[in-house]
Image (cartoon, rainbow, N blue to C red; front, top):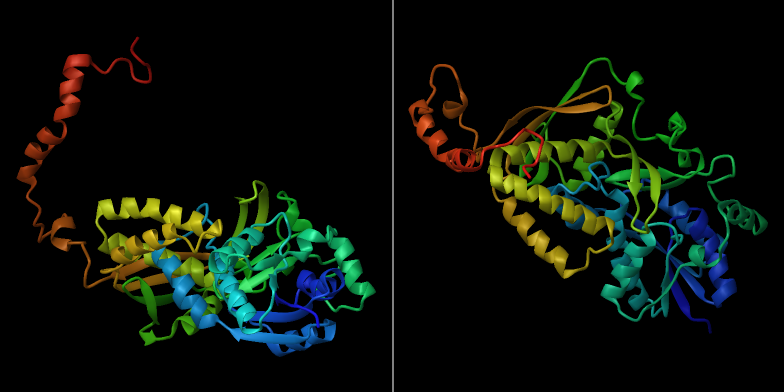
Length: 405
């Protein structure tokens, strides 16, 4: 009787080939685990394909609510955006998948788990660091890293053994999708000078073909969590799905990013993330209204650390627990509504309101109703400028741009 391995199965090229390869190389019975994080695929067909290719069992887990409530929304509250561009869609899904892989291995009494990541990508780190944190000692196999085949050789292997895959040498894109975004790489995209062909985009219209009239939406937040669109309360999954459609129709959410991978190389990544683009911008606008200046500035530093932590596969760490506790504290009063304008590939904040707003019309206005005491300003300036004035009087300021010797 063979031992069993639970394979994180997407139905794509590498994991489909891995089913046969694991049997040949390790003499293991493969249990294919497909995890639905909003991939919008025919999971019944993927399940049947896994069995046809050689899996002894095929499992499908609907994890959309888990993904949104415990991974996406906490990252949204943190304003987590890697290198200022990437909303971390794929990176956020990996710790959840690792957790479900470990759970399945225990339930199925499997001796190992496997994933389809290559040795050049970030996902291998995210999977394996998370698995080791959750189940130290559980054997991990990475077929695509071990078999040392080029992409063309992998395609040839699949064709030789009649393994159906949605990739050909003429259309070799590697695609990963979930509710929070879609990533596309490989093929012509590996040349950073080449404009992404329109065929790679499936979630967003080309901005030049988007509606000629802007669309407006109002997003309601409760403690940093989006709960309504145009006053209608929606669960997290439905809200993100609706925003993906609405914003995608207006061409919002296309990202062309030359990013620094965890393994030390630069790679060109194309992303589509309509809902993420809108929600992150709306959330930051509401924070600008409800957090103090010092809170905002410190939270920007935390946001960068939080994004790096997610990207680098360190979700199941004490550092994450510490940062998450701070983020939750900052969200106590991030409640209100933000109005967004969607037009020709752009989203723009055009209105915001909150019952906990720190914006005071009476203090901000220059018109009738001004409550600001301008007579206090000279004294404030005197005290504020005291150290500058003192240093200038004693040491001078020298020539601007030069250092005194």
